[in-house]
Length: 522
Image 1: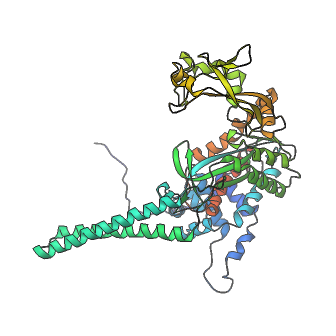
Image 2: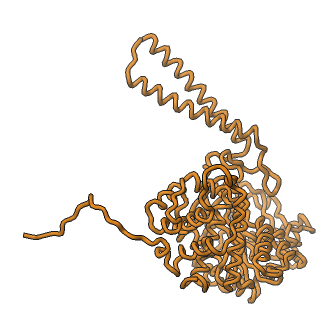
């Protein structure tokens, strides 16, 4: 007969645990512990407390910061889960020195670091500079759109929100009429059972929720003004978090923030980071350059941006972005949206691409619509369409916003009305006649045209190709490895704290992997 070792779950084991031995050199938790404990000046937190004579003794901000950074490095954002980890996980017990802060203490600590977070970020950047992790020659800017703690269903222009409030109020009135009718019916029959009471409770709860929604929208409309966009036109506001915005991301339409970072090429250290509640990347270049300049100067660099290379994708292509780069004397490489189409290396691959335009053009079957190249000049200098009809000059001094100059030609309405080639010439059925623009002069003094010339050069394409390997791994590390796929706070100020904390974790990880002081101990 088989024999087994006896076991008893009621027995007690005395297990000696040395907390500092749990933080092994070369690990991220070891670096977090020693950097926060011995290299950061956190005296800025002192002003938070006034318990020097009376009041409860507070948990040291160093301990709270270490708990938050370790939690964020493992994808734990929830303050309740951080509280639980401090009670159950030996690494969290070690880094917190067996302190078990309440979840409300952790949440308050994170959401109120509006003055301290910038100081912590720059101190970590200073350590990166001392460790030789900043190259300071090539920087890249990019952003990732992440959902915030707000629903896009509460978004809309002020007129839309007013309509939504009116619909809710109408629904409330209808439900109240139904309640009155039901009460009269119950009085007549004088019969009530348990099911009727349950239905009444559910209806009352639903009615209260609708009243709260209507009151919430009403209060928002009274206390706020319509939100303006970059063109001074009204854009959608959000009742829950009005500083967030509706954005189109790779995961669909979200209500959130554009988390932006400026990264140094040498070891992908984040030189500056900030969140924006606007969808347009081109509006973020100037504040990012200003913030990076200040951070790098604090880290000990002189003229940190002057003469340095800057790469960004076509979302940052605008006259304002390029002017900002010139003001900070940076050698920028920012392509326009048609950069890939002009790339000679990709010309042979176009015919293998699936059509994505609204005309469903099939490259293998030829062009769907006639282009400018299909219109030819005859011996008399008249522009002739593929059907053999002559176009007249509509505007001799046509000029685009980018500085392109040319002549605007238009076909007679009678020539296009019954033309057999109309489906292949006009994009919309409602268009009366085809127009063609022939450009003959280019404004080479235009800042955007100069960038197109620069980015199309061999050196420009070579320099811009480094952007992908520079900044994309940073967002892959934060979003995928650290599981930062949404923000849990509201308002730009608090969301920015959360984003900077993740960027700090990323930079500490770079110090752990490439630094010298935290690999094998102090």
